Length: 337
Image (cartoon, rainbow, N blue to C red; front, side, top):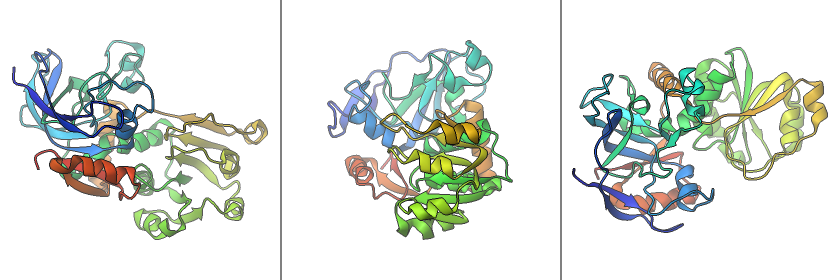
């Protein structure tokens, strides 16, 4: 068995350095992917820095993989060698529990993370279980598609799971790696989109992405003027906000849905929620079927992430670019450069 060549951190917040490991024999239900490119996500930073207290070192990050099928386990029949596929945050699930059998593979109690306890996609080769290697349809650019497999499905999944209708008025909190894709998806879905940002200078960008309305989230009066007007709000930020102010912008039966990993407990008054029959929810990424649906939707509507491309030889520069908060909006690393 040939060794895999990767980039690994050997300590928390450590620089990525060349790393080689033997993956062992290919499992019957596994897919071996030759990596072409891999997106860089804030979750990679959180894992590299051990913010969630579950990182193991050496750690190979990278969970927004685009590549070609190089080898197939003997039980894998739905893919072909040479086919272009993507791999996201999850690389496997048990396939027999109630959640998997119901199509909610991402809710499986034994779901396997691509960079949790195993080596990820900043490498020449990576593996996953067969259900999680998702073919790219025609019309999706492989050079830009990587971020769809984490950031993209994270914001697309709630549209499906929460039954968002094209007639609804929706809000997106945060115009960044997740938020810019949420705006593009919801605009193409047919919704009237309001973008919320603490950066007033992002209004032009938000409108170019498809938002019809823009609200400076630091402006309490502006938030007050849209009280009771939104049916659905998708929060993509990982910071604590005045959640009560956002709940106030929801119409009766409106929903605030969070996909950003807010670090502190969320506090809100019960009466605005109770009287308006409002709800608060959250979700993790999406199932393989939802990912495939998202890709078809992207192909149909020519939706792609806004990306910055770095060669693998500059992978630590790419990390620093993401840390700086200046990336517009997703960073992708060409693993062959």
